[in-house]
Image (cartoon, rainbow, N blue to C red):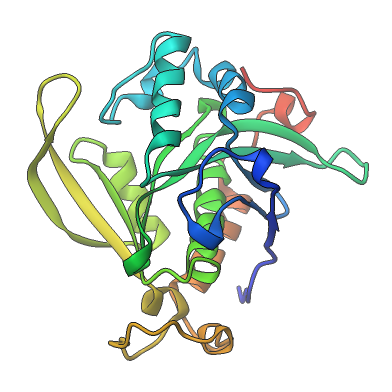
Length: 266
């Protein structure tokens, strides 16, 4: 299977349509493939809708440092904390369902963030990811993360994107490997989890050299011109992940019939 440069669309939203201002010139972008849409979060508009997707599945936050949210108030507080944190930028994730019309049906299914944002060093982290259980093991997580990595390396011109996870979160560790991240190491007793136990944290990363497939690692911190960052002959992580996305679309768990018919998740 040969796949070069999956189509992706970046749309700059009006500042009135999103809450956070943490990505400099990269603020406010919606990111779209043919099957998913990442919309930058507007706190008061989006948190009530996200709560409806999350509320019956508090286990989705089991490995997050703050732990599960059992009430709307606690869920709102977590999201508000993200939105006020200078190191976070959040997106709501929608499935795009073909309904035979010009505009596809949008179904909210979860959220994803860039965090640990350090613009000076062009360093970011993909994290705080959660999706409704009915889309687990489908293409959704892989496609969403791929889209955010494309945005990070193409629009934000990231030098490094990291992924980190609780030592007991085996699913997240497997996901990091499947997505093409390298294990950098394990930070022992990195933080105290919400249940009072020590968390050892697995740190993974991917660099621009990895993503674009350069054989020689660049030492210059200058931003590479776009034309040199997209060699069609490169066997970088981007193209490898595009193959993974297509395989998951073809072989992964199908979306529930109700979702395919445009019924909202709850």
